[in-house]
Amino acid sequence: MPSNPLPSRLRVRTVPVDVTGDLLTRIPDEVDPREVVTWLREGDGMVGWGRAVTVRTSGPARFADAESWWDRVRELAEVEDEVRDAGSGLVAFGSFAYSPASADESVLTVPRVVVGRRDGQGWVTHVVLDDEPWPPAHPAEMLARSNPRIDELDPVVETPGTVPAERWPEVVGRAVERITSGAVEKVVLARDVTVRHRDGDVVRVAPVLERLQRRYAATWTFAVDGLVGATPEMLVRLQGGRARSRVLAGTIRRGAAALHETPQGDPEHPVDPRLRLVSSEKDLDEHAYAVRSVVEALAPHCSDLQVPTAPYVLELPDVYHLATDLTGRMRSGATSLRLAAALHPSAAICGTPTAAAAAVIAELEGMDRGRYSGPVGWVDGDGDGDWGIALRCGELAPDRRSLRIFAGGGIVAASNPHAELAETEVKLTAMRHALGLATR
Image 1 (tube, rainbow, N blue to C red):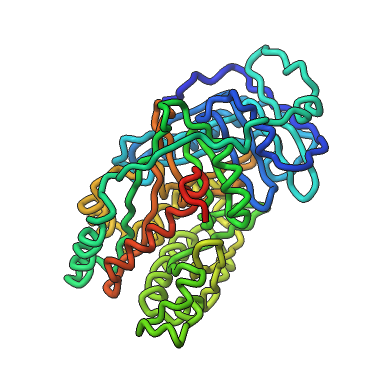
Image 2 (cartoon, rainbow, N blue to C red):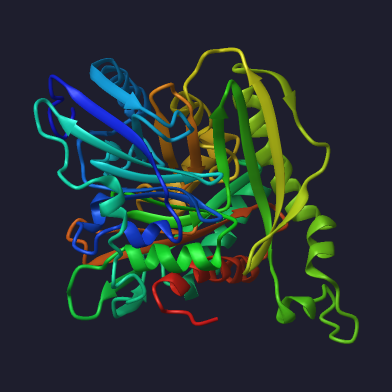
């Protein structure tokens, strides 16, 4: 059921404006952090705030219910779009629970205000309901204002999550036992850490997003309904009749320490971690499972599906990933949201076979992932859009005074439990840095 009833009219107006500098500085500091929406990469994209209309869904039909609601919104919307670019006009931002059994609701929301920029073209979109007046300020006047506290982090403290770090190797070891017994081929396990405002105040998300964007510009920095992060993995992009997906699976940390971690532990003969990654049977197997699951999900929707024969190494500030980019021409007429639903959950965040891996996750993780590792992104009035996988992220609690941050890794028969713990610690670095808990 919609969180707020649909109005009789939804009026949308997009006008071109000159938008320079950091888009995140346009988010007013007084805005409720759960009403901030963001989708940015290399400084371009969209930021927004406020809620015009919102739907919350749950259970196995959470994607279908959200898409049905979006169809109704598109029908009643009156759109004036002077820009006509990806993300201008009518647009909704969404994030979906990883599991149909999650107690956390999925959400699709149309902001009151969106500020966007793509390839030098900037715009502002306002949304009003029924006979509400348009905002009195000209968009250029609104953009002249800047958030004075964008660099001011809130004081936070970290406490153990559902499964403390010292117990994680035990959990991984039990997963390896399931794999060697033949119950499952690969399973992706995740753990959480709790971060609270030291003084019990609300945790503001704009400064967190700012630090993520600065350090991880090559990823997609996102915010939807209190879920904030910087994902390196594009689940699906649909634009102009062409679908694209980036698969990441297989990880090794980078830096001087990793350079001297040879399989034999010989510091006199360091091995470039990128070479170790592309020659690791464990990581290549994990990656192959993930690619296969995406191909199987896209095949019914795409013709001319292009699948590279080998992955490349994606370089991020903290880690290297094995990556594969797939592209195909749409033939099914599905929206980007429907494609995201078809692709979720991929082997990169669940495992294979899917049902068996999901059962192992439910048995061993000991937590509700919420919207972590679910699809996050946006869809426009034509059905195009971007949907990433909510990784390297944290989710605000309902009271907005704490959040859980998450990290996971793919477990296969060759996995080392202590190495898997180390991998989650490296992946937690992104959010720890963004919250001021990690300085490197």
